[in-house]
Figure 1 (cartoon, rainbow, N blue to C red):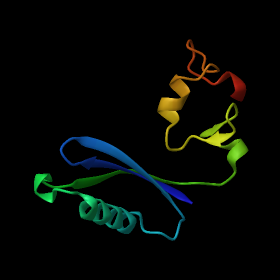
Figure 2: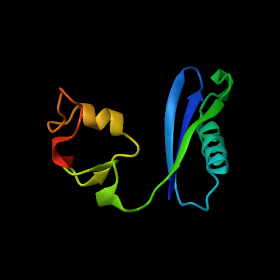
Figure 3: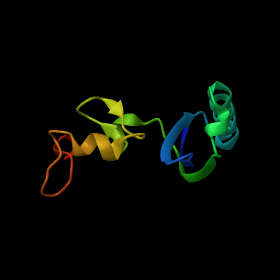
Figure 4: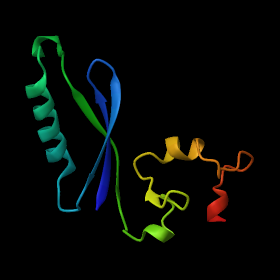
Length: 103
């Protein structure tokens, strides 16, 4: 399993996170996704263009309990939204920024 993070510039910048098996090419998957989105647009003349920039790609060990991206409170993987989810969590220590459940 791997996670690829892309920054998309359409009219504004938007982040897209793709999760896929290791043998899948993230750039090919992104191309298929973008082609599908373009076909579904009702007025394609309004779309000026799409620029995709790969921001990061990382492997998943699938050893969830020992992973830094595993949330002990929800028992879910936070690889796609760690920065958002942790800042709103009741177990995040505001002083040190560490999850109280991971200590």
